[in-house]
Image 1 (cartoon, rainbow, N blue to C red):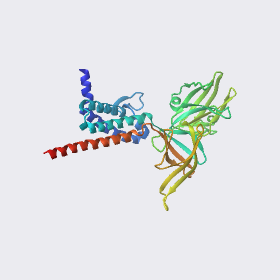
Image 2 (cartoon, helix red, strand yellow):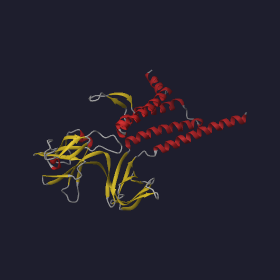
Image 3 (tube, rainbow, N blue to C red):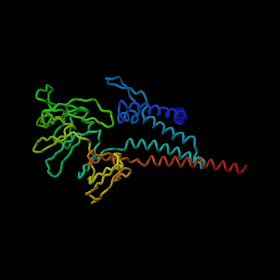
Image 4 (cartoon, one colour):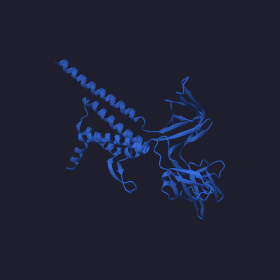
Length: 382
């Protein structure tokens, strides 16, 4: 029967060996691919996918050529669960084996949960500066900000993925349409010279006197792409022109329509929170007589207006701030020692690996102790 064949297939020891072998090949291949693709792209294509795809250079199609990390890990989890239910009965003598298998399954599921649920961003603060948001370094957003109200800004953020599609963007919070005319994933913006034959990037704002050059995508971990885009603002009465937005342009560009003032900016994607952190003091300690770092520490003021919470926290290496389901690690600092860079991590399944390791360790100890006790009893009875 088909059901019997499926059960036999998923409980097969050969399937376990094949999955482990494919996993070794995947790790080796993915590690080599990091040289060309970079860490983040290699992770996405090899380990956070069901298949690895290949296609001729310049072609618009790709075919799956090897199983990805999600597929291999998923089949291995099914194999472990199925073989455990079929081969082992729950008895005191097998309790250790159940715990070991349960720990391995929990470890694989925990890694999947980390990939799907975790999020990392950075918080860059200068001394005296306060922020209520962190930023994703390798992901941008197009921000359309209504700054008419002197007390409150109304912000509509458009993710980079939507901007890349170069479609007309309509949002309930915007009384006009944003048409993406061009998008460059990595670029350099230069001032347009008087004798420059290349046309201006846009008709309004900085873009009317600037040009954009497309650059190859960056793969090094220490560097990142700097995207640029040309957008057109289209109102019911017609077009207001085109604007060049880029991370090269530090200040937002303004325009007025229907007695309201708006700003445009292409910036790192922001993640806002109901509380803020203010950097009071950054300390960089070195060992006496050397330039070898000894400690980095950031004294911050945490304020949450809705609860009235206001307290100082010291963040340093191996002593992060854990607050509201997020962890703030001391990651880096500015060269002038007046600014700090905190890594912000949200990982709901962060305890899973610890539980898994404890469960496997206890299971091995229980199984070894049971076997040793049985052997000792047999020797005594003999």
